[in-house]
Length: 196
Image 1 (cartoon, one colour):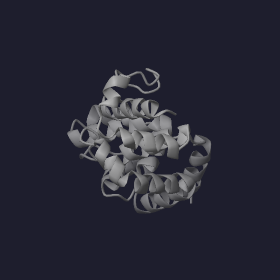
Image 2 (cartoon, rainbow, N blue to C red):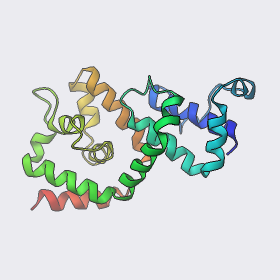
Image 3 (cartoon, rainbow, N blue to C red):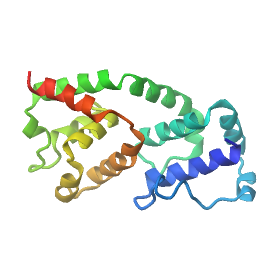
């Protein structure tokens, strides 16, 4: 990737995670940007450095990991990614390499404390699964996998009309297409845990 292409990826992914209506895949990374505007940026050296350091797929993963790890996608700017991006990317890669183990551990803990029907019950406010995510006991990856299995997102969208859930819901829906997993493997793990 050229430095300008890295910049385009950055803009497209930022729009994807930040804007409800923009879809990175649907719009095929189309954003309004020109080489002239790129050349005027004071941080263009970072895009040049990144284009040399990483392969194309790694650049996308690097940016996704940084956008998904922030609690305020609107407020994230390239300076934060420049300062802490490497560390966040390494942690994200570690999480994804041990995703099966991580999912199993987090699911065992969750379902040992609570029955399945109570985990997704939002009749009294935030459900247990959301509280566990917000407290850091469940990763965003585990939450996305739960949504792929139980399809709770749409139901929560109708029942939970608060900004906390709206932010998490957006994060789940935007991150989901980047999480390429064998859903049947995770269903099998969950079945074993719940049927113990």
